[in-house]
Length: 561
Ligand code: DON
Image 1 (tube, helix red, strand yellow):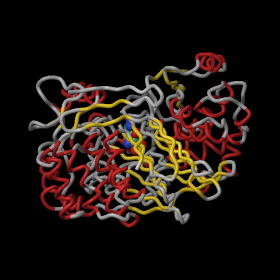
Image 2 (cartoon, helix red, strand yellow; image 1 turned 90 degrees about the horizontal axis):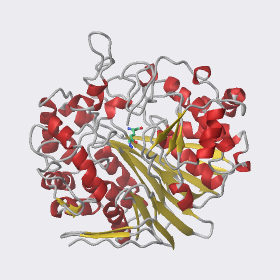
Image 3 (tube, helix red, strand yellow; image 1 turned 180 degrees about the vertical axis):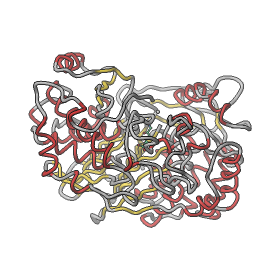
Image 4 (tube, helix red, strand yellow; image 1 turned 90 degrees about the vertical axis):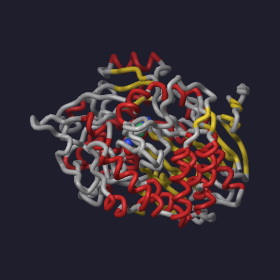
């Protein structure tokens, strides 16, 4: 039996199925309670459950990520990687980098054929596209900040995988749309493929994944990076052109990095440093736009969008040239986000016309394509905050499921610059700073961010969307700080995006037409996109009131402890 109840105020849907009931809750206002916002109601509920058991924000974010790996296979993962930004209630800030790394056998030109042509099919699909997964190591590294043991945090995910859960309409349609790719990239049958089309309310049971999670529960890190799971993963590699070895898995290390922090109009923005470009881009864009007093304008008005787009153009040109894994390149972060550098960079801005991209960076070549990633925002009742963005990269990653272990593998290798000037699946170009090297982390755009006011978490925000991630987080902060918009309006307002190359500015389908027309008159090339991002935002007022909003673009949902 399946029923859907729609509450007009909170857009809340209730699905009931044989094993699982869930509510999609889009907006919540509470006080003195912990809140989790994620891409799937069952994952948010898993997080809220551990909060109820006495866990803190970090317990909740681990439980939510495990649950997403089960109920949101398009992006939730144990076969991918992510970044965590945390601010504890004692003011301590930290980040965990559990980004995938290139296998030890990876080489600079591994995707270039005999004729010098880059083969993006290989960097995007199948076994050669897979980086060493970092997520499980990341969950274990988070334990240091948690109150509960891993065996409790992983249990909700085990239950969901073992007993099954009813899938949403969006998941059903994505599984159907990808059936052919799943069959192409998997030698044996996988639970994600069935003969008749998936439909909303169908129950997805993942026995193999449940066994893998139980191994992790019993054996800890070794349950994933060594023994049976590692052997399954390596034998999956051998079924095709994969190069990941048992040694690669055993050697994977999480990096704890100093958070990237900067001031924006009296607020302290805490975000992810390299190997994510997210924090640097955010700092560059907010600072450059800040030179034009954005607060004078209105959200999505011509002048505001023009200023913001031009800041995006200059920041993304820098991304292509300077950014990569800080353990392999010279880290220029402090120079790139300095006012000395950015004020100079902003000198070429003019309200009279679009700045040609060729004037702000070295163009080698261009073009573009499409995506999945997912973001989680959490606050607990003690005031600890956590923001995680995690990814398989593309939708269902490489589309390869580890036979015997039941989880999708990422296709993160495509986030490297596989050849200078050749765009990745998000149209991002790069050069030597982000070239492939064994064991190196590929440059990311993920931007889990916590904004502090008077030293306390004020805004917890993030989104999926490839290169649109930093630009959407940037818009969210400007919406709240400059335009004084509320959480719901900011999250669900149409977004725009520019990334230096291609030269055009993308607008979400319901974006104000008048702004687009005005910008075209100023020389901007424009295009329409169906959807940009899925933002999960929590705002905490000075009085402690919490306003949490899950993006209306998907099944995203808020859960309260
Ligand atoms: O790390 C990155 O920047 C990308 N792999 C993120 C991919 C992504 O957001 C896809 N989601 N829509």
